[in-house]
Image (cartoon, rainbow, N blue to C red; front, side, top):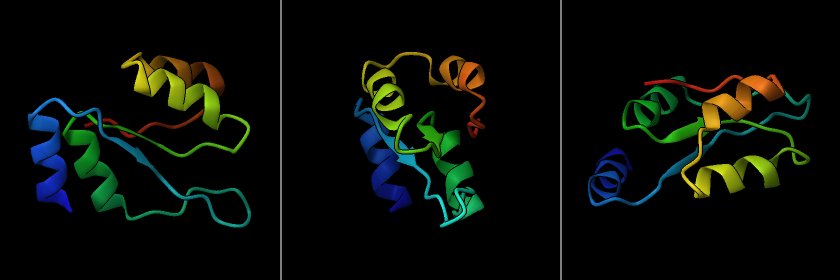
Length: 79
């Protein structure tokens, strides 16, 4: 998975790592993988279903997900 993600990023694919939320709405994910994806420069975040359309739109447009997340109170993994 990591090797494929790194290869995709190296050829210019916009990779987005959407972290899971548990039943209580708290992020539930493998921190090592999240950190690795963030180190590749991938947008790496968890969000509520209501926030998803906005944040995925920004990520797909290669906008500043970190800036949007800060305004929305969402923690984003940084590489």
